[in-house]
Image (cartoon, rainbow, N blue to C red; front, top):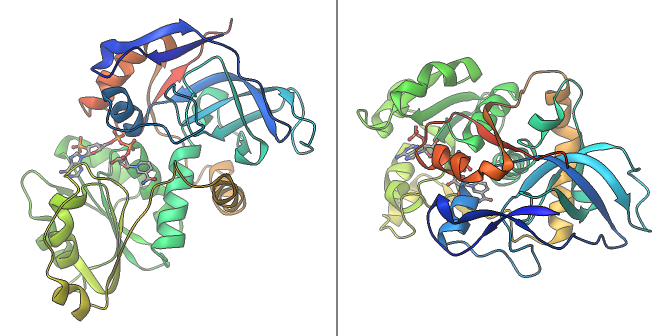
Length: 327
Ligand SMILES: NC(=O)c1ccc[n+]([C@@H]2O[C@H](COP(=O)([O-])OP(=O)(O)OC[C@H]3O[C@@H](n4cnc5c(N)ncnc54)[C@H](OP(=O)(O)O)[C@@H]3O)[C@@H](O)[C@H]2O)c1
């Protein structure tokens, strides 16, 4: 089969379309003929040499895919050859075939095109585990989502609105109209506005009950300022660096908490539990059209370099899909 490989750490030009050995599924795995994958920021970091795959994972990029089941391992009862699925992967999704644990797969939701389904697993699992498990988001809570135009942000806006939360988001001004359409009540231009002041204005001084943060160090102190009493800051990205100073007195006086998580290196069992919760609680929202995949562009997989350029320039809202050649 062919896969997108990283010939050496570097810019988008280091992505090659290369013949590689076919994956062989284990007893508890399925083999998927891939229809599509999608670009995540983590793939860009991996390509640049800053994010090594966890032990045992494919060295090739790609954290999610959709396609048809081509073979099932001896212990797999849930899926049959020909089923249309999408899957959460630890790597290797930019390829014509992947082998993945059967319980890391989800059915393609009704009404969603097979290619577009590739854009769902990573965002759905990240958003569910961080907003519900870590952030304990309740209906009527105010949620601040940094980077609402990202793949994660576009999904989180829709999910949180569907759960009855009030959503505020930061993004470049050109993306605000689209993010309001997805369900954000307030869009904050982080280039021109102080997001702490904007959050306090929008909430009459209450603050954000939950913040989903992708900036890390650069936003830590201001995020704590923007939190409500009892607020939960959930850090999932370090786009603004990993180090910061924090006035712990402020955190304590707000009875607030900070958590940080990574999805990719979690154990197979932890991922299976998240996928099962997503299937039960999130998939019905997609199947009924309450949440829709936001696909900015569908790029042929061998042109992954072009897709990476789009994502690195932050031209996109939502996801860039990578469509696999059929042979
Ligand atoms: N911990 C985990 O398990 C996990 C899982 C998945 C993703 N993530 C993280 O989640 C983040 C989003 O991932 P993705 O793949 O969805 O990324 P993405 O589509 O590449 O989006 C990145 C976003 O960052 C925004 N941004 C840049 N500077 C900003 C600032 N100062 N304030 C607000 N937004 C800013 C950009 O929006 P503008 O164009 O508006 O600047 C862009 O939409 C990444 O940091 C990724 O590493 C973490």
